[in-house]
Each structure stands twice: as C-alpha cells, then as structure tokens.
Length: 289
Ligand code: MF3
Ligand code: CO
Image 1: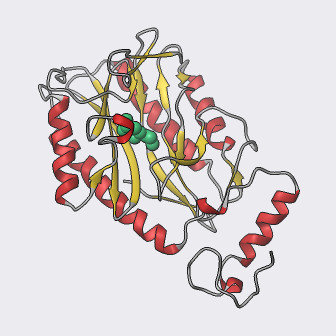
Image 2: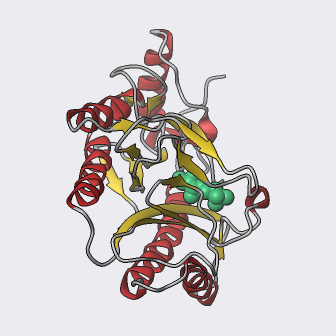
Image 3: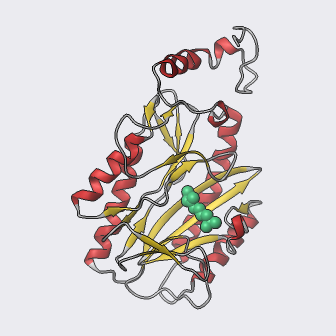
C-alpha cells in the first residue's frame, strides 16, 4: 500500500512520511526487488525508541564500570552478581537475565574454558590468572541493552592475555564492518578472518542479535560468515556484536546439571566481548561503552 507523502510515517515518529522514511523505503524496495533479505519493519527503531535504548545502555555501561572498579582476586562470582543486581535496581532498572528462560541470576560470569552463560555462584572464586567475562543486560522502561567485557584477574598468562586482546579486536573489526545497507555477513567475515590469523576458532552455536524492544530480536549475528550475505542492515536497526573466540576448537558442551554453562569441549580458553550498535543513515553509533 502506498503511503501518502503528507501522512504520518509508519515508524511512529509523528513526522510526515516525506520527511521521514520515504527515502528509506525507496532504497529498501529497490534492494528487495533485487532479492536481498530485508528486515521486517518491526526491527526499525524510531527516534523515541532509540532514545529509550540509549538510556538503558547508559545504565548497562554503568553496571560494567561498577564491576570493573570492584572485581578482584578472591571475589566470588556471586559477589559480582550482587554488584550487578544492586547497581541496576538502584537505578530503577531490571537485570534482563534474571528469570530469563529460567536463568537464576542477574548476569553471566564465564571463567577460562567457560564460553558463556556461566551462572554466578558463591563457591566460584576468582583466582590469580583467571580470565572472566561478565555479561550484563538491562531493561529500563521496557528497553533492552546488552554488553560484556573480559577482566584479567591478577597475573594472567601471555596466551590468555593474547586471546583476550585479539577477541576485543575481533569485536571492534566486526563493528567497523557494519555499514547502512550492508549485510550481516560482513560482520562475521571480518571477525573470523582476524581470529583465524592467530589460529583461534569462532564459536558457532551462539551469535549476536537484534536488540531494543526485546532481549533477542532478529537478525542472528553470526561471528563467522561471508561478505554480502544474510539480512541487510538498515538505518534504525540495533544489533549486538559479541564474538566468542576459543584458543582451541570451536566445539562446546553444556553443563547437564545447570542446563546453561557452556564449556569448550577441548578445555581450551575462551574469550568474549560484546557491544551494541545502532545503524544510522550515515554510519553507526556504538551504544555501550
Ligand atoms: N547476555 C547474553 C547475550 O549476549 C544472554 C544471556 S541469556 C541469560 O545475549 F539468560 F543467560 F542471561
Ligand atoms: Co547479547
């Protein structure tokens, strides 16, 4: 159905269509005709939604900064969880992981060969030489944010440090590969190329994701892939880039008892960094730290 130029735009901005998404729709429809995989309109955020997600992401960054300032040798992962919960709730927000599909805690804490979804626990104590990912997600006034960082505890081996650094570079290169009207496969291609240079392997069982009005929206953002393939990334979309990189093989197994904790099958170290990105008309904006 054709929208009239002076009618309100479909995005809910309240602006006239001709001053809002008319130009967007021209590009969108051309690409669709050429057979590209185009995002559903639900994934396109308007300026009101973008402002909402940014506020959520600001709190989420604050949580990670708070963890960064306190994390140390001898601390239990339960204590990290407590820091996350207290900071989030005192800022009027909700930790998104808590009770998410039965997840029992407010964040994920994944140490050494744990790839992701480690469950904070009072008996899990950070030791000298550990590398740990703290993955934090926040709901504020219905808007979701999600980011994670690695922390190196005390004196870390050269191998572990290298993995942590290269994984951060992978995330950054993945983000740099994003452009408006580009493809989601561009991200995985950039990330995998970098990791493979060091003999590392990329986890395939989990990916990044759209985010904003829900914790996990389309598309899935694989961290391995081919350029110019997959869904087109348009202005107004928000996604996470969160490569999990293993020093050894990419294969995983999940703890049968808790149903969550994901380990490298070969026991090798694994690292992860996660950030959120908004695609704009002219480029991208990084939304968390
Ligand atoms: N924060 C994770 C992500 O990056 C999701 C964790 S799900 C949870 O998507 F339930 F374990 F919290
Ligand atoms: Co995520």
